[in-house]
Image: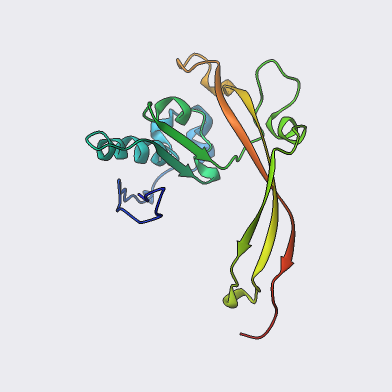
Length: 181
């Protein structure tokens, strides 16, 4: 947990330790696509958020944002993560189908106008021989309705998840300085 205003680390809200069983069958052998989300490793993202909810209930937290990498791009998470002032910020992994549109998510985002621009200062990484640089970024966004995956037909999930999709585009990198480290 991190305080949004100060950036101060507050501690851990949930911790999970797991290992794969050596005898566990491969995805293809298990018919992975038809497994319930609770049986999949990716369920850890939902379990972490659900387990974290108890940390926020007694406090005066105004808003909680769960951040996940592309592995957290799970349709079920939009409906299982606690509600209220809770947001999910997930890096998209799949070019999902949209409701009432011939286009998918990525093409829909590409068609949106640039809503803003900013410069991100990227620090040097001497281990990888990378100099510090300024990265020019463009941002666009739009509301979307993601269709539920076919594998969820009859599982009680809504036909779509309504959310805001955000696209951040790195235009170019300008080196601030070069030199030996």
